[in-house]
Image (cartoon, rainbow, N blue to C red; front, top):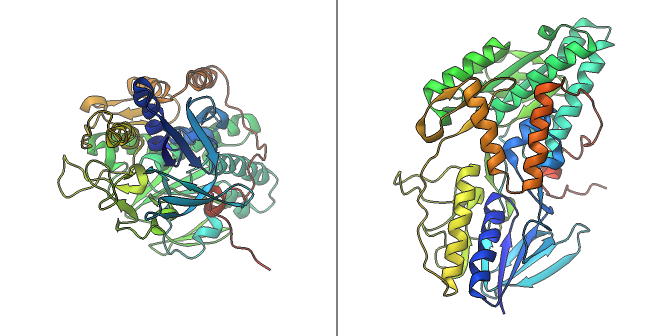
Length: 436
């Protein structure tokens, strides 16, 4: 029995596993497919801003592995090391017990973690948007700050609690600030305060908002954000982070208790422990997604530097669109390495991006057709409903969208995720260092 081990349950690993079972199942191949992941689900990350904004329940963006990947054994664990010579690996389960496993084919798709810069106070006082824990914490924390501001006697302290700073004006950061703005507007109506009192500051060193969608749509998104009272400062970033304020790169001070860091990703920590060549924190691979000089070892997704054959010299960006398609190519090439079918090189064709900007507005460029406003909103939500890989989750998200359109948004701080849960290390499955 040939053993195939897939590390990671993100877009790439999930898609690879699903297509592998179909390809090999049709051939009756004697293989055993195992997926090792710190969590028991595939996270549909594009909807995390909707979770933070209170539109979508966190359960709806988690695709359970147990009933979505038939024929795949799902193992909860975090891989620590890989022995390529002996074709074995070691991992730790949720109780930190060590285990080992052998493999004949290894698929490295551990995903990515938030890229942190050397900014004083950043890790302690900022939160990211890579996991449900972070999204839930941001929502609960923000609502709590609005509630505390209502009883704050010092006007300056109240203003700080009603101020949100988001660093990163790309896809995720822009969607996050738009959804939090919508949540603030709903809170203002229900808690009876002026929505204009809630201030949002979006920072980025780039020259435009969301360069991924092009200048035309980026400018349209910028206009919408500013129309909704969001202070967008381009060419500016974070210099220091503190519990009650931040210092910007222009040395200005902003009093705030809510800081979100959404500036990019880097390969999962496992990649640095493999002893293999990397490119900007991502594992180097060939166009067929094999790891050079290691037959039977494949890698793709956010953790891999996949050559972009449409732009020689560049690598594919870490997006869900690339990750999903690379997963399909991975499945084909892993099967081909076992004698089933032929392999192919990964060549991406961009189908465009969709960006939700809150109530009644979005920007999108499907098939290079530039859309904004309500038409883009319809395309954006239709795309997500199509892309979520499980009918039950699609149904639940569709109902959430309908509920958001017909009823006021729920403004509650349930406390589902604590501050410790949402720290960068804890939320990404990296054990915190023990202190005496």
